Image 1 (spheres, rainbow, N blue to C red):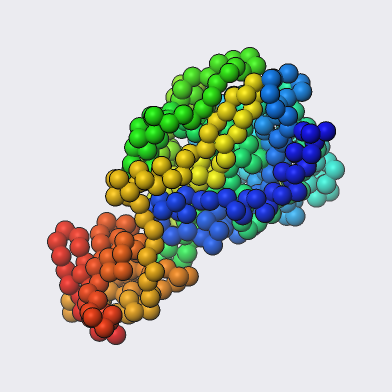
Image 2: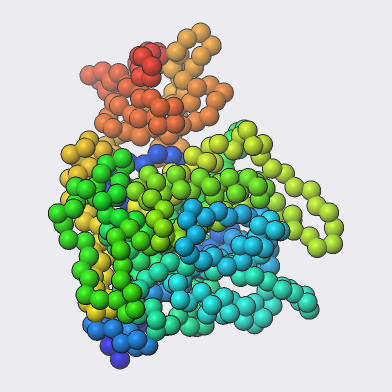
Length: 477
């Protein structure tokens, strides 16, 4: 009864608890790039995410009874109401000690035809079969009498905290994750398939992030969701700072025994799902997926031998590309123009992983094994020590906006959008400005810094661009 009530409490309070969890930026961790409204994979229009979180029991592990610390995550590229609506997709593995079903047909056909499910290692078969049954029950294929399909189900191993050999994920949990799927703000940390996961020495789990990029005067969104369960504490790097080494003196886990196996430092896995509304073809989505390891490497992932690092990317553009009977026409971005999406992928993956760790809470599981959350206050102090702590100062944005003349016919435009400032050389791409203080801003997109000259009346007459020297631009409008 105690375990049942705990599970019920978690489910009933899911949304209210998730909205209170801190995210990486709340700790003053600086990141590069422009985020979407929710800074989540659901910023890509149509994408829905749902969870089933199973937390029951405590104490000694009794196989088949618990304790249970696991769950299921569901991702629908175009929302579950669209039913069968394939998207262009492709995948990549950094190290293949893991599983993601359905990838052979994705490689062959270029399409993802099903939702993406993520769970623990031993529940892949159960989840796959439950999804197939849900297809039958809901007429996923819209009346087609003869159909076949290969559900995509990915996994990471949660046996340090969860009774993984008790096989506790059931069909009802899969359906629950599906039914809970929605857009907007989504929970992070100890939720869904990420419930019992650990990352870079601390509690891990589910994390998400997004970026908006401008290509040929069109804005595209790219979002990421990770199930992070990888890496060694000594390698943990946040905003370029060796946080893991600085925290080596702090206890981050307690180990009393696993049901069937032991755990070595650095082992584990990560599943990364990348969504975008940019019109990309399967071979281009393969290139997106191949950039995921760069973001993982930024935070300290090394692709250990025992790690299953598997990534899938899909595009929600070209909605009518899939057709069994007729030829179709599609559009795509030029290969020469998709590099901003590569940057967005690396940036989003890096932030999503840290979001998962910041949102996660300390959890104990089987045999009293415990995984501690990333300690927030010490992390902030370490960022300050390395001069990487960033809390946005209160600034009056309107006084910075306007046109600045750098040279004849060369203007700098400072604009405001959604409570953020942007730098733009006339006719070129906009770049977000990150405040350091009331007069100084980093512009990571150009690899430079802007310093405004603020007089005693708090007015601005000029700015200085610091990049390969110092260049002054006078305010003209």
